[in-house]
Image 1 (cartoon, rainbow, N blue to C red):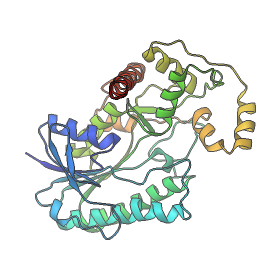
Image 2 (cartoon, one colour; image 1 turned 30 degrees about the vertical axis):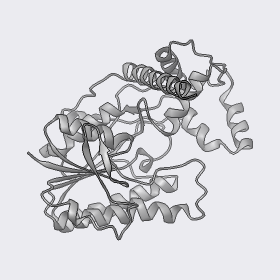
Image 3 (cartoon, rainbow, N blue to C red; image 1 turned 60 degrees about the vertical axis):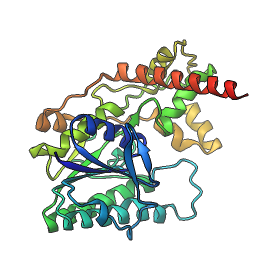
Length: 326
């Protein structure tokens, strides 16, 4: 049984990946900031806040594969006075320290979860793995720096490297923009996004987790970069309609010209958020499909509605529990 170390195992992607790998028969070493348990009483090893000085040696014994999900994520309201330094400490220095120690411990393959932001923030044509990186934000720049360092380290040590750049990952407990869309759709308020029809690529968490598991042992995945997505692009307006359907509601979308929305978002300091809702961002997944013969487990429309249903169910249960305590 192959042993896989998963970092960020208590997070949105890492928890689902741990569950998936256990189901496939892998021996999983799950690592998070704080010790505890996840899933079916799987021990979670606490490593603390990661940086270039983190000592991973005690966790790498017998490990054949590392999947590095842990990262400092992009935050719209990040008040850190030196955001780039913070991103570099976690996303670059910590990643390279882990990879160096993994190579020294005899780890065969290192899978790095990067970001489509490395390619850029919007598209004229779908992004491919061959495009020259054009990161716009500090988070994406740090991911590119980590990719560059990891590729050099892999060349020097012979450890196999896989880099995965997903777009927005969604699911019932997703943080970030998808979580905001769920809350907005559930609010019943009119939303001025009826004209948000630019095509955007997304990836359901279940599809991403399945793809990661494919790259762990597939011989052709070694030393490759992959873009991964559902294969069915959705606009923000379409996404909101699907979410509303999953919630059992009618969507309340108002058609407002995007030029006006961009103007207003600039006045309110929300331009970055609106860019993620209105600008096109498409991903070409031909390499993943052709090289690895990979296909998404679940169709986007089904996955979005199912995520909304699960989110609504959990919110209802939490509400009942709060009422019971009152």
